[in-house]
Image (cartoon, rainbow, N blue to C red; front, side):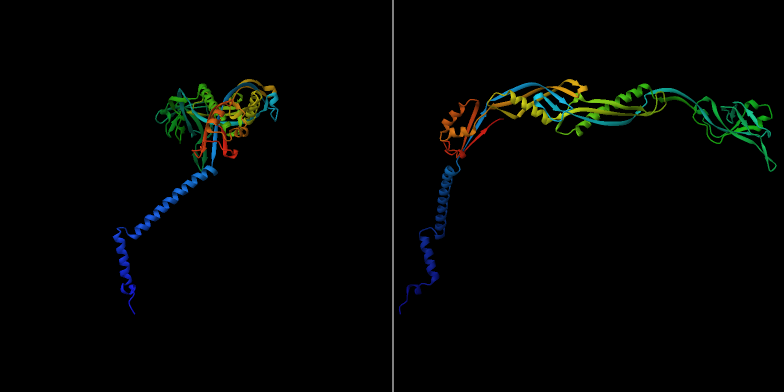
Length: 416
């Protein structure tokens, strides 16, 4: 049997031959396939983009109309009564309810004395006086006592020294403790324990048998300046502390009054319940403590009551066919005109400002715009009464007409 063509040429050689044919055309087969795949992908993307644009034209079409209405500024001056005896607002009578807020605050503070005085103090102490003269008691009127180093002291009152006594055959002197004071002021008399003689007994047998002895230091002797609390110190302390406490009390209102309330500063009254000093004027001291207690009261009302009252008055005075822009409502000041304590009322003078604009029927406006070109729509809108500015925005951008479907039209009033 004769040989077939594929029997003569092995498979590998046949592949090589094919590769050889590709080489003769100068372009490998794999590169040709990749190039064709890229071209197909590019065409597919282009077609998809066209389909998206076309579907946007038909399914995602939208027009936004922005209108700036002409704003009219309304200004009113009104009187308003804040009444503590009512619970609900009566706008027809220009009355809203009020509420009393109160708190008590106390404080104490140390203040330093500012005055100086010349101070002369005599040293004082205790001497034990002995009677070793006889078993009879001895009476001494206020007498002089001289210490071992020559410092003179005086007893402050008459004393009776008990008589001596015998114990187990031994004479035990009678004794008594006597308060004495230095003859002159000064620190030199602040001496330590010492023995004392009575000069009045000098030259007699009593001089050595009636004597004194101290067992502790004499103290209090002084000459120099000392701090003293003056009446001016106390008055200045009172003023300073009251002023600080009043300020704290007012600040305390800010944390205790509910956020939806307005507290009128003009109604705040503050009463001093207590004001006292720990030391009196003229006292020698470095410092003193002053204490104050005050009670504060004020009248307030709800912000919402005030705002609702202002809106009601503005609405009554607005031209027909206009709408209030509530965000523009402004109440510039609360001027306290009169306070009627016996009736529990306060009369305020208010200045109320707000913006208003002409009412626009948006559905009716949309119907009027259906199918119009952008140029026609703009002319129509700009000639509407009470309109100051308009803008038209569309999707897609190439769109030149207002859609026929109201759902595809959005109208926005620009009130800023």
